[in-house]
Image (cartoon, rainbow, N blue to C red):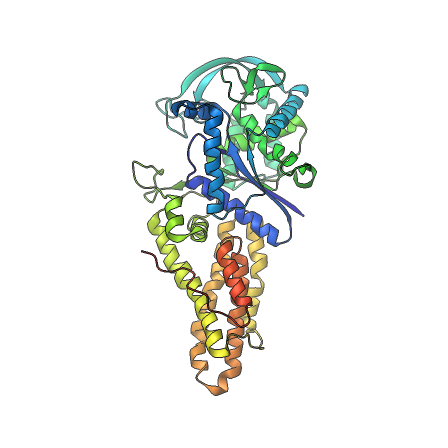
Length: 485
């Protein structure tokens, strides 16, 4: 079975931030989990480097767009290993192969009769690189995403016949209710359709920083059509001399933020149909991470969470754990450094970390670091045996937060088991040797199970603990989650 997961490609007009880390970590968890299950897995991420926002940001820095894109793309690349994210390929939309394949696909859309030339006039957000409909515009003629004043733009463009796919999109959402998830996102996409779809600009004549339109060299493709196609184009050149398209297409799941819902749930399927390509199986739309005060994160408000500050203080595994533990994936949630500290101390250090330390220490103290030959407690064995299937079901439902909660239920159950059985008392009773063996074997087995399932979430920590549990004789490892200032 193949599993193909993507993040949106990240705009290089600004620095990497918490939102980029959040989506990338979630995709990495899904990919690691599927690899562990033996699925043929491909994980794609990268950078979106064309369009007006990038050209404007470069101009503000006194740089050419390509130089600015090169500079910031490296920062996005550097973020990934820092947060433990390991994609199979990092695409840049300035890649020559990407541009060539974009032109091939959109030429096919043109040849299939889904493109025409016309005059466009509308309200435009230069930071979204998107024209806004009247129903989307905020009071004061402002963008609903960036809350900046929109500009009135008029130019001759090539248009994509999005309106021709209205009925087909309606049918898609009715026949495949899980195509867009969660339900909140599906309803929002259906609301866009219900308003009546309008044809959209496929090209820009005033802008030069983009992929050239092959049938009209005076135009470049509108950045969203260039960017959306990355999920398809990457498979053609991600591995030298090999085309992976037949192996992985269509994608299993696209992970996107809700600010780009319209492009991925309406434009994208319509464009794939127009090109004669198969649709992805699912688009999963997650919510926003907000400041600790419930407002949009802002430097001026001082309510943000700097991922690099978390990395420096607590490490990558703690950041990964926190982001998928504190905010239910798919919804909006408040984040802050105080909440990171609370999760770190209460759950990572006191619950999981202490469970690991106590178990290894007792095995060393009471059995010289060797695993006794004794049966696992049948009650605990039953509870542990179902965990892998339960976590797999959560991951298949794109619910990494739910999967983590299932794991943590077992972590807490094992801690209760220690308190119930009191192995330190059994160790003082020569007649309880067999009972102590069973308790120690049960804890060892329980830690193996929960730590294996934690692997996709906290890969470094999991690897250390599993290595310690497999060592004969066992060695007590240093505290996994030491106290921090």
